[in-house]
Image 1 (cartoon, rainbow, N blue to C red):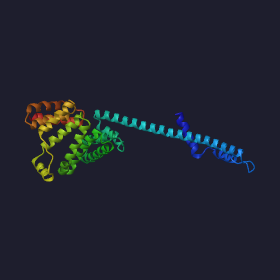
Image 2 (cartoon, rainbow, N blue to C red):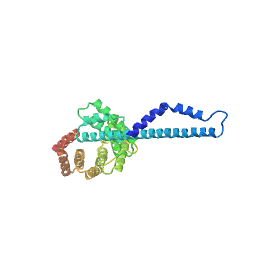
Image 3 (cartoon, rainbow, N blue to C red):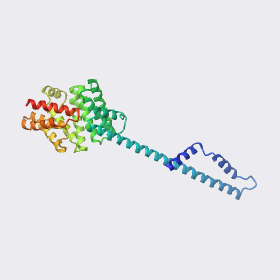
Length: 314
């Protein structure tokens, strides 16, 4: 820190010029000529003195410039390290709030950093925006604004880092959500893009059970698509997206194998898919697990409610 203070003092000095610099130059110039009568050795001696002083000045100036440069590097480095610590601190707080189910507090924390260039912050903000939109207390207009905001944050996260698995995952999720406000044509049209981003996320992080689950949801959605929507899809697209309940079931089991009991909704959809395949014994098993899953979030509560309703209807 002493070196930095010294460098900054030097920087101020050289910005306005040392007070003695003009006198040194004048004295050096005067020493170069002693009049017309003695040109030889004394003239060269004078020039030599000027040269010596010039070299000394150059050394001082170079040293000052070097110290200023080093100070700038140190200060810039400290700023970067501080910014890095700041980002890590926010992410740590955000992950704690997410794990605690504090959806509104999490959103308020992260939205302060909506102009960040950090992909890790941005995809978390996309997730927080979407989670807030999912709350039953959020109005319809707010849900729409939050959905589009979430998509924008996820898009920016991808722009900042295309190798970020979570950014691909949340872009796919948010793009799907926006489709709910733009009609069946847009939703089906986006389906291929959504699946591509989920697949890219798995490619970057093969152990991410949540993304594997999402491909299962994608398959379940198109396996369950009503006939009239299939007809619209076939009219609009030469090769509309299709899938089967067997394919969906495979992904749900893959997700459970990657991270057992990681997500209440995966348990629910295992039960629902077995119901679609008329396997009531396995449906009962997985729906019971979904009903008994600890409710940490609003979504967990909704899963419990749906699982109980399906169990009562069996």
